[in-house]
Each structure stands twice: as C-alpha cells, then as structure tokens.
Amino acid sequence: MSAQFTNVVSSIAFIAALSTVIWWLRSRDNHWSSSDGSRCICQMALALTGSSPKWIEARMVIDPAHAVVMCKSRGKRGRSLRGAWIVIGQPHASHENVSDAHVRTYALCRRDNADILAMLRVPASSRSVTALDALLPR
Image 1 (cartoon, rainbow, N blue to C red):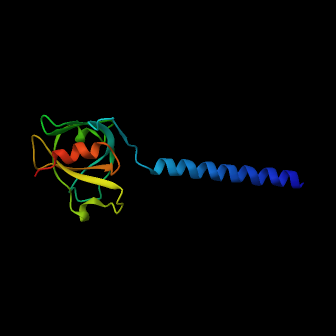
Image 2 (image 1 turned 135 degrees about the vertical axis):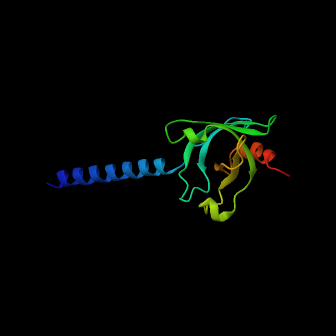
Image 3 (image 1 turned 90 degrees about the horizontal axis):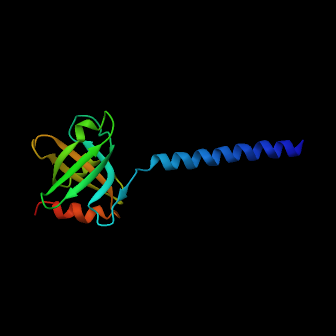
C-alpha cells in the first residue's frame, strides 16, 4: 500500500514540476540577437490604440545606413507591424506598461506615415540595444 501511495505522490509531484517549468518558459519573451546586433527577434506592439498593447513577436533587421528598422512578423496580428520603422525615442513610462529594469523599450513611427506609432521591447542585455541606441535622435 505505501509503495502505491509513494508512486502516486511522486507522479503528481513530477507533473506539477513539469507544469511549472512549462509555464515559466511560456511566460518569458522570446529573444534572439545576432552577434553584431543588426538582427533580432523581439516584441513589438502598436502604441496609443486606446487599449493595453498586445505584444507580438517580430523579427527585426536594423539598418543604420538608412536609419530604419525593418520589421518582419508572422501571422494575422503581425500584418500591421510589417515594414520600415524609424526610431524616434523612448516612450514615457506611462505608455510602457513594463516595470522591469531589465527591459529596454523604444518608440517607433512608420517611415511613410509618422502618425502610426509602435513600441519595441528588447532585453537590456541584448546586443541589439547598441544598434538601436545608435538610431535614437540626438
């Protein structure tokens, strides 16, 4: 009887530990950055839409020669983010909805329409932070 009880308890503990690890991995943002920081996978959201931003995974190519950030995103939600963006600064803390000091957020506007704004979120330890900081207006 005690062997069966131990088996059941250890099975439940294993499933709980596995569920916790899966939840922790899914709650983190995906991020990758090339060795020179010119390409990265990060989070991006349209800004000032009247609702809380919906962060979407985006693939970015940072082009310092043209001072733009090219966004390639997948899926139906990411269609509005595709194209060329200009880094215009860092958003005010009230628009970021992020209280983590380990995350850098940048404000972007469309290259062809300055009325469309977005926010780009990358970890502060990313190699892309240097490339994005170089595009900030002085």
